Image (spheres, rainbow, N blue to C red):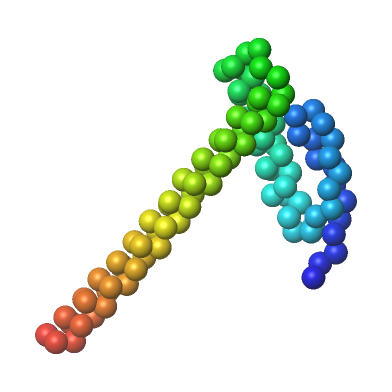
Length: 98
């Protein structure tokens, strides 16, 4: 198990001190950057809301993205199974007809 390192992350103009594994630092920083970019985008698209509203919008956006990613992963898994079955069928056909 690797040692946890302290990092400072800014989300919605608030600082958060986290302890994370060193190999996760880049991913955490990129995620925080994406959150802040989405907040800025929602502020442009939906003027007059407060920070909590924008954070809720980002949360919904992330949840939807995860759902879409899960669907893609399931589709990729199913496609992989179909390709394997097809390859097996081709191999069998080649064996039967040299």
